[in-house]
Image 1 (cartoon, rainbow, N blue to C red):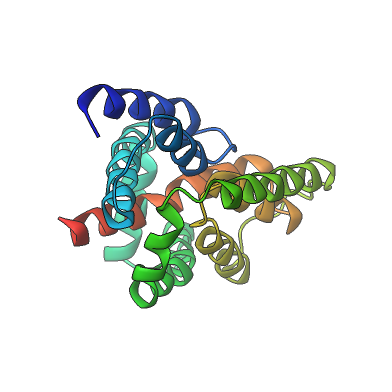
Image 2 (cartoon, rainbow, N blue to C red):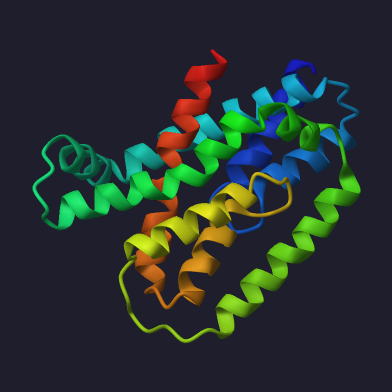
Length: 201
């Protein structure tokens, strides 16, 4: 992959990361169109690096929330901040286990399997449609909700399944307020991406 290809894919990542359209799926499509011949391990690492960059922007935008989460973890006192921090940790469990136990298998999803990306994009569209029709009951994220949302995040490792789309849609289908669902979705992925980046480096 040359520098121009990397810049183009970086633009694709920047434009699609915060939309429920699967940035990883669009990256795989971009790699295929650019004729990228990277082995699956290198392809996944490049995708993780791009996600790390957008995770940093999330930290900047939600810096107050990130600080409150860290504060809640290190000064656990049973208040709202601490409970929210614990929910973030719970949401990380499914994806963490998946990454630790099936990393090599996951790499194969980033080998230019375009039909898979297409099928997963259709599933993402169906999820968004169902969430759009769901009733907003205004509930907060519960501990059980956090685990279920975490499972949807783990499934979203498949390129074409939008992580934000899957997690926000799952939250809304569980009755969580849409604004709270979006906030939880963007915050829950930051520690995972940073952790994955640290492992690969």
